[in-house]
Image 1 (cartoon, rainbow, N blue to C red):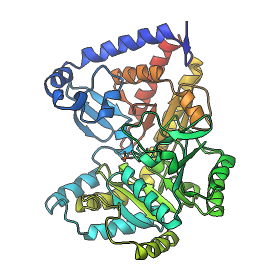
Image 2: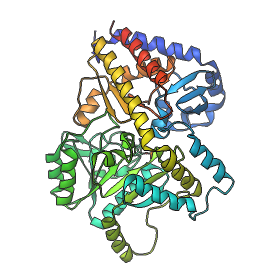
Image 3: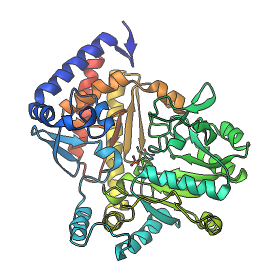
Image 4: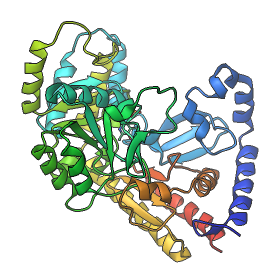
Length: 453
Ligand code: PMP
């Protein structure tokens, strides 16, 4: 029989089928509601990637608070997905909920700032460093705008990204390496442009490859996460970030650090915790406690270059904007999150919980002799169904085991635990209780007992 991630295929299929059936039997209300009401949506889902969850059908959420979801079939679910980072500080943190209630009485959007905007700006600098900030609504947009500025000030066309990266639905970054060549990603919908004119892909942790790409003189910016979190998690080699910084400076490219996921690293994100020195900084998702908000900033030196460029720019649309961005609700939530939620104390709690989780999962893997491993970046933990450590996107792609992961995700949900879909990422919020962590470890252990009897 074929062996997948150490598991005979027939055993895997038997367990997956049983877990799928168990899920379907346990959610009659969700099934009935979907049968009645989902038809209005394309393929029955309001966002196409929701169709990629592995369960036979979706559960419908009734409510969420802290690190717990309740679905309409009455199940309480320990939430380690946390909106794939949007709710990393817990669902509806009280200071944010309070800020929403207060702002709801004062208008939702008006194209003008508030006093809370000024407070948010001050807190952004205090938290992340002295960047010149702009507000967007999604991290996708923040990355797009940062790239625009990088190209404008350098006059160069390309962004250097790492094979296997994800920075949102930014077409410019949607390239991959195939046999050493940068090509458009195969799955991209409706893209007719040759993206390689504006992008070059390198392998993460390959400074020699980066230097070779930069030496051509056409790279405006390196755009990277500090840790690759969007394939199976890949940590940077000890000298990688110092090397990137030095190479960017040497070759006149800007360094853009996307902290949208690695904000899990601790207060101020990975950059602050590990002393990175980006020219531009991006963070989204959880930065306003779950209210759609992203921020991006540039150093004063880049701001000066941008202003010089801007002074000579022809009048007309800049390509940076979106009408509902920088609205008063965002500022209220941003200020509340930065002041009261994204605190060093909360980060410390999250880290301690994540450490407990990572140890528990690693111990289960070892006990069952699974050829798997666990990686952690602050409050973010991932189990990977392959041996580690992984060094780059190509290795991460090869480590990905969709059939195994799908079976585990459904089995975990049947045991009351939700983890992020598509890979095996788990987040620990300040609201996550020890007993929730221990339940997840126990559920994981139970599943491994069946995989590796
Ligand atoms: N940057 C990174 C590192 C991300 O992981 C993501 C989303 N997973 C984004 C940007 C895009 O965020 P959004 O979907 O909120 O635009």
